[in-house]
Image (cartoon, rainbow, N blue to C red; front, side):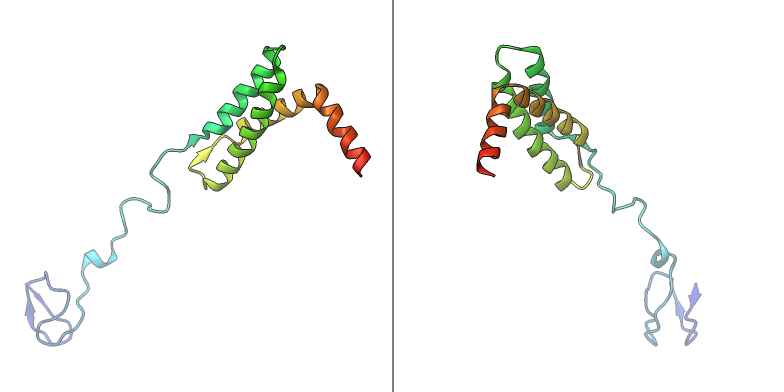
Length: 127
């Protein structure tokens, strides 16, 4: 049996306040911290699907020489979408390097094809 430190009333030990005077009783449970860190997400990080699609399209532009533009444009678009998903994910979504690699491969392919030449000519004429 315990006693209230303020009035001396006998208490059972399960109360949080003294029934006689209302004094707050300190217990060991008040000082406990959570067993797990709740600030860290419990879901494991995963790669962005758009980043993976960007890398696949970017690699395929260099392997399949007969349709590079059909894959270069999706590589660039998926790379940008994957990169933005990684930035918004706050650590839950990974794959920044995958997205950047896919974008770089897509941009390199589109620059070496005719679209790169057209892009440069249009911007020089207009600017």
